[in-house]
Image 1: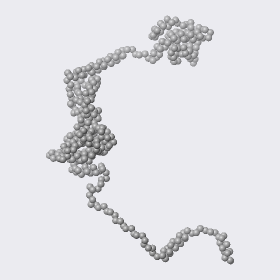
Image 2 (image 1 turned 180 degrees about the vertical axis):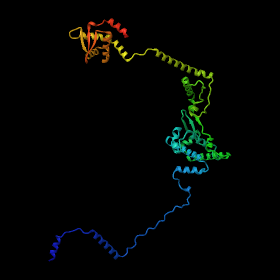
Image 3 (image 1 turned 30 degrees about the vertical axis):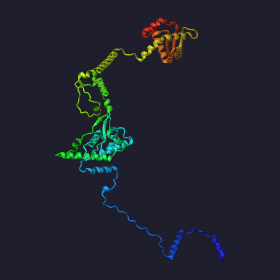
Image 4 (image 1 turned 135 degrees about the vertical axis):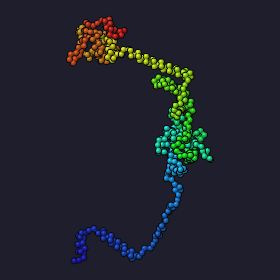
Length: 434
């Protein structure tokens, strides 16, 4: 067969996809063969030097490492300052640090000009301390430790004082000598904490040296003098008026609550009453000569007022009972009877035919009366007047008739009473006749 015919036959043959796997193998073999012919490749790239890692020496002391948090550093410093102190005193040191932190945060938000109310500050101190609720006694104890006798070379004291403004409002203020310093610079917590720790340690050391036998931490804490609470000048000015109000209230409420065997006591001052730190059992007996002019008049006024009230109550008990709602409605209907009688006479005279006896439906007659009255009346009030005329005042002239479900009113003009008779009957029933 000629060559051209074989080529023509291949044109009609089926064409299939090349085997990709065989192609990849063939390409890999060709690459390997070319590399073998070319020889080894020259080393153009430089090797990277290995950088030695820095090892942390294990001999670095713990004190040189930075603390994990400010709170932990303060706690470690407090624990290392006095390692031989009992845990209760460490808790007291932590309470003072929480108090200073809460105060610094408060003045950062509200400023240092106005006094700080302890009712707002104590929850923040308790949250920072994290042991229990903090009371005013705890703050006084911290300030009392800060005001203790300083050691040699330390003359700085606590810049805070407690002031009473009355009505259980005790505020934390800066002493006037250091007010300018505290207003221009922030609170130095580290310095104040160090002063507190030093004075607490010195007081504990003095206590331990003075005790011959065993020592008690609770007894040591109890003998620490508390910071005083000074009354404000405004409270001192308002003291006389408050005392006068207390005396007047006692004079008014005395007959009910006073025990006849109890002594008459007065509070020495309004500041001690607002603090609640007055020792119990201290009573001041008022001499009768000095207190009689001030208390005689209020007591007499109170007794006379009470006697008048009791007299009014006894007199009201003897009076007859007031009229009921039905009786008041009947009395109002009696006052309207004369005017309704004239209207009924005119309505019956205008009836077609001019008969002496005329009948009306209740609703129609009520509408006629309402349209002829000088003052507006309701349907119930007109019906009440018609019932009173039928039963008591104009018997025979007005008669209400009910047949089944139909109600009507019959007016007989021949039975109309005279005006004098109507007035006499109204007077007998209790109505006021003009």
